[in-house]
Each structure stands twice: as C-alpha cells, then as structure tokens.
Length: 123
Image (cartoon, rainbow, N blue to C red):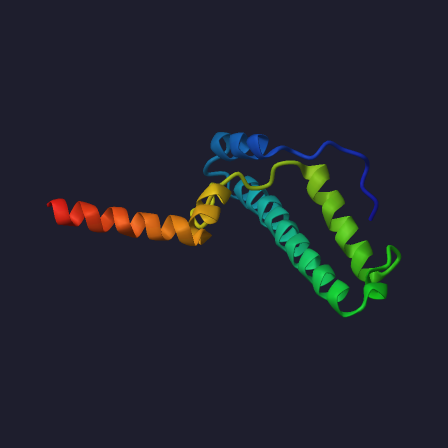
C-alpha cells in the first residue's frame, strides 16, 4: 500500500492528542502504537549501527554502501530523521562525559580519596 506524502505528528502533538482524548480507547491505542513503533525504529537503528561496527571489524567489504546492512542502516536513520524527536525521556543511567572522564582519571580518584581521608580525620 502506498501512502500519500504527509507530515508525521510530532512527539508534542502525540502528547496533546493523548491528553485531549483520554478515555477514547481506539485513539489511545493508535497513539500508543505510533509511539511503540517509533521507539522500535530507534532501537533497531542502534542495533544496525552496532552490526555495522562489528562487520567493519571483520571485513570492510561487508559494509559497502550497496550492502543490505548499510541499506538497512541508512533507511532506519532516514526514518528517525523524518519523524524528529522520538523519546525525550531523561536517561537515568546516562553519566555526563565530564563525570566519566573525571572518574577514569587515577589522579582525581586519588585526590578525592585523600580529601575524604583528611575530612574523616578532622571529624
């Protein structure tokens, strides 16, 4: 089935429809289905990216632009761009880069341990 060109609903529009149509089971199911499929596309894009990285390590010819895995990766990326924001939920497991860098720095870890030890001695 071919669909006509259309502007996909934004995440904000989906949320507004959800709020405005609470209790309307079919509308709620449709909004949930749209969001479910968008999240699935986002997850599949990540998995395709990982597959390309792995294939690149094994044999670079596996990831030629015309290869099926690259076509899949490109198509998923295009869909993510077409839709726009899919999930703006803050990630609780995300650590800011500057915190990660600080945590990996052995001098910083030692400095922090020394400072903790000095504080404990003063108390």
